[in-house]
Length: 383
Ligand code: 13P
Ligand code: 13P
Ligand code: MG
Ligand code: MG
Ligand code: MG
Image 1: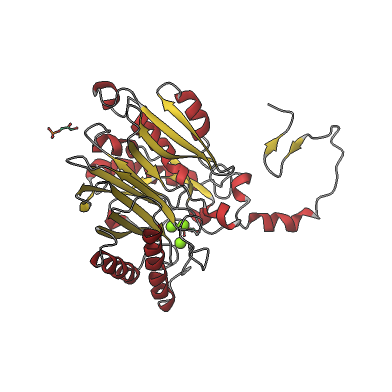
Image 2 (image 1 turned 90 degrees about the vertical axis):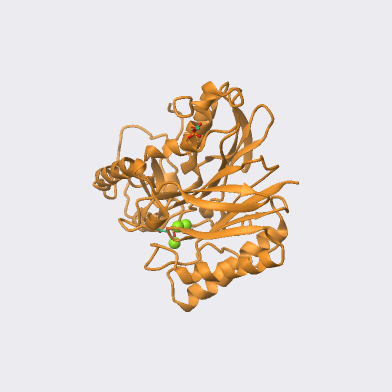
């Protein structure tokens, strides 16, 4: 029998702007899942928050993309949204982009990461949940976990990891995916995933037997809605130990608070700060972007845990570095590269401002005919 872990999340409104989820909405969602557990639809669940995003972590035996599970999540978000509206929470129902549920929650706004596997005798998993950033924020950590021997000792030492891993990379603009093998194709892999706004690592498989190792929610809200609707605030599930990287190897990349897109108005680069649940909220400039890591053991479909893995002084230095980076990059104010580039800003309200200025531009004699299409940021006929 296979077990499925489904992590489905949505911002359904929050307390004091985009700061954090209100406990009453967590309760409302929990009630829906408790009832589903009683009826045997799911085996177990844990409801929590990453900043202003409501997180449903569920286990069941129905496989991925199951309509009943997706509808359950949808119902939980709808019930939580009712509470959010009653309390006047900010942006109530923010990520529910459609009114109608039609069998699958993907494309409706919520983020979805699901994996199905035959449980090992001991099955440790880590659920990562980020706020104020996008799915590509996990590209760098995933590369380190599954392809960098300076991060993951097991790639060198452990014969079960030594063959390497397969990365499934999604082009979120074209709706296409490509599989690349590590270590053989790491330069091609990096050529893609170094552009995290477009190329998102969706899944990682162990090469020797194609066993699922990791999965990321790849929903890009701006591409679904065609306008700015906050950041996607992704989730990720990673299996650990016994043929996969150790839990400590899975957490290690987050000791480096790398720069990600998101933060204020989803329009700024900032450091990704690893925090425990007690700091699962944002404040400074609506950030800085945060990531929570919850460890579970999955046994007979039951979630045992969680362990609040970043709630540890071992990550104090990463948090301190993140503060320093935040101070430094914030001093750029509205300038790139703190503010995102023009392609990403297309989905914000900036184009409206630029449109108002358009008529005020007068032609000037430059002595040459420019060949650069500057609106999209794309250069023609230049390297
Ligand atoms: P323990 O001896 O504490 O179980 O550690 C095993 C291990 O592999 C740690 O990475
Ligand atoms: P969220 O996607 O977390 O709601 O962030 C929206 C925002 O604009 C923060 O400044
Ligand atoms: Mg929000
Ligand atoms: Mg959020
Ligand atoms: Mg969001």
